[in-house]
Image (tube, rainbow, N blue to C red):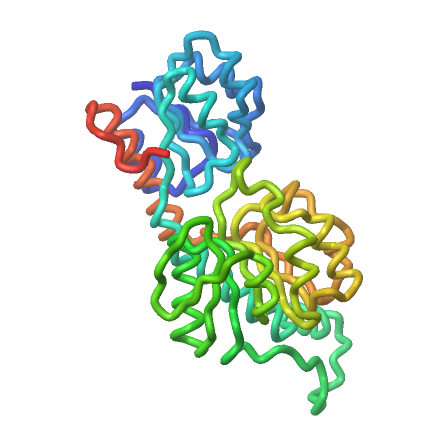
Length: 315
């Protein structure tokens, strides 16, 4: 079966794919355009998409009687794929849940610590040659141990974040979730605003997609404590970035740690200019082991489809 892989993957994944499929690997790191998507849907049996490939409804519907029957997405998030349009065209969609959980939770803790302890600001001070030595009140930050952590979205990643904070730092955990859920050592509150009001650090850990677009905005930021920190490791457009910037500029919240952005890779100059904001270039799953596991999970979905077996990870 002819398989298109949209961007370079770890070598072990490419070798395994080539052993079982007729593989075409695009020779660019740029995401697929809508025109490329439409053309590819007519030319390949299977496609392994990656983040920001433009599998929009328009691009998918423009492929008349598409040859492609499976989009085996590389990643747990699939908001770059219009799943409803794919189903209309008889195209199944899978993702790679589980493989990304621990690495993404680790990045959330990194952002919490970096922002709370002003690590980015401190590194910039040292690199600029402006550090004059230790002082008793220099760059005082927020002590993470024992603080209340509010998590919006208590799926696999949210629970992994909660475990790290509770077991590693003795934090109290509160959360908001679209359905009622029992989580050991955590208390579910009635709303996101209740979570924001109760927390020293608020973490967004929800899926992306139309249902969560701008889920977190002024209503949440207005209820956060003035010294509280907001962290986003979900998808950029889950957050109303304009509202976040306004809250930071007005001093309504104490800082932010971001790994994703509403219009990434564009990052607003207003965020770049703020010393109390930690900015990472979407590093959530960036380890060799995790990216290999993600690729192998995508291949498991491709193999199952080729054999006519049930898909392990349908969305």
